[in-house]
Amino acid sequence: MAASDQIHDVVIVGAGPAGIGVAAALRRIGVQPTLIDRTGIGASFTAWPESMRLISPSFTSNQFGLVDLNAVTPNTSPALSLLEQHPTGVQYAQYLRMVADLEGLRVRRGITVRDVCPDGGNLLVEADFQAALRARTVVWAAGEAGDPRRNGFPGAERCVPTIAVRQWDQHPGGEVVVVGGFESGIDAAVNLVARGRRVTVLDHHQPWATVDPDPSRTLSPYTRSRLREATATGHLDLVGDVHVAAVNAQAPGYEVLTDDGRSWRSEGPPLLATGFEGSLRQVAHRFVWDADGLVEVTEQADESTLTPGLFLAGPMLSHRGASFCFIYKFRQRFGVVARAIGQRLGIDTSPLEALRAPGFLLDDLSCCEDCAC
Ligand SMILES: Cc1cc2nc3c(=O)[nH]c(=O)nc-3n(C[C@H](O)[C@H](O)[C@H](O)COP(=O)(O)OP(=O)(O)OC[C@H]3O[C@@H](n4cnc5c(N)ncnc54)[C@H](O)[C@@H]3O)c2cc1C
Image 1 (cartoon, rainbow, N blue to C red):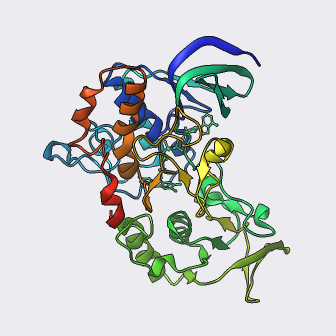
Image 2 (cartoon, helix red, strand yellow):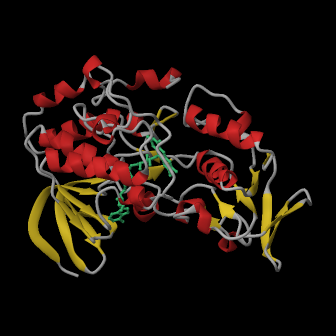
Image 3 (tube, protein in one colour):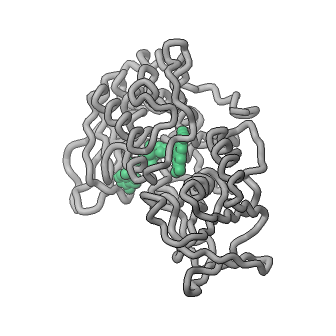
């Protein structure tokens, strides 16, 4: 389909916390980005199971120089807006809509981007069923939660991703096997146990037994306290160091086989909590990837090292071995991306310095080397 003639200064793909946060930073230097989303603001959050909540706590600490961990701008607080410590997905999306309103952001919904192509010094944002947008710069902020991984073992397609279950009461069967024992898997397990179900969680490792200062590598305190309650019922089995080899349909129910020859029965479809493919898959060829499968971006600006003008924001970011996968981590780079874009557009970026003290303009990454986040 033909491209439109208008050249946008900035197109941001994705209106989740990363897209809204970078857009708000750009507003500080007078840039009005074109935000597009295939569904709408906070769509990944509104798709969460109804009982799921943010594991990172919100607190009304902004006035004391400690910005609410889940805030995407320095002067807003989900705790204050929602009066919740652990907002549900629907509540958090409400907070994001509030920020978008406050910042005067306009979001074009119903546009699914499939590629971002270099185009004679600009970029072409190609979308389904619609003319491509021309842009000087593009921020890829399409997240990683939209697409659960379903290809880990034969029969994975018979399982249901935990993220796809709206209400736990509606998941069929009495005994249920959950594959994957990190945050999403344990969240599913504790919710099912609270509804009187027997649950077995299988995992390659033993995430419930691992303690690490980096919250990306260990269960949150919020999850651990719920896990203690669920374990005390005697209805939860946690089985670690086990590899699921296959899931077979075996009426009435399913058989989950592990590669050491053991098997478990699941009366309802087993639940999958084995991670996400991530939206970057779509534009993977616009970035360089390292040997560990991590995407490479510049330290100065989180810009693709392969496609100039294409920036990355959100949980897929990592620098010097440190993962930026929580909102309070990746928001530290909003100011850095906005500053690089502003400089590219020849705009005075000095107003962005106000983002440094509250932690939204982290440009010295030496702290990543011994990060204990
Ligand atoms: C179960 C679970 C619990 C979590 N709990 C926490 C927590 O407590 N604290 C925390 O900090 N983080 C948490 N996270 C991580 C957090 O959800 C993500 O870090 C956050 O959603 C990332 O924000 P984002 O804006 O990059 O992506 P998203 O929130 O996923 O937003 C991406 C947006 O892009 C849109 N989009 C995707 N593809 C396209 C496309 N091709 N074209 C157009 N639009 C597109 C989507 O509709 C969506 O609105 C959790 C994640 C999960 C899965």
